[in-house]
Amino acid sequence: MLKPVQIMPDGPLNWLDIDLLDFRDTGPRFVLAGEEDGSWTVMDQATNMPAFWNDQLLFGLDFERADDLVETMNQLMLDIRQA
Image (cartoon, rainbow, N blue to C red; front, side, top):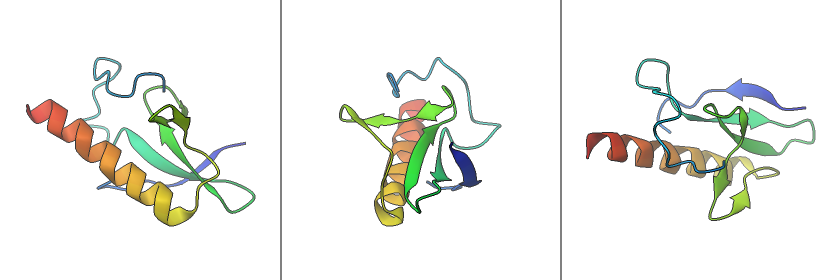
């Protein structure tokens, strides 16, 4: 079972589809969730499911990799909104 444990302020289906929800007032779209085995999952708050990146489901990751992905994906979402 996924348990959100930390929302990263800076940092599946089609995660670039910004029409799903507007997170400007509610925080980042992608957040980290800690797993019981100590691994991390990148969660997409628009779908409440693990996120996808390059056709890969983002679960079972070490913290550093998951944190980098959350930061990158949230930054891309900001860049799209500002374009």
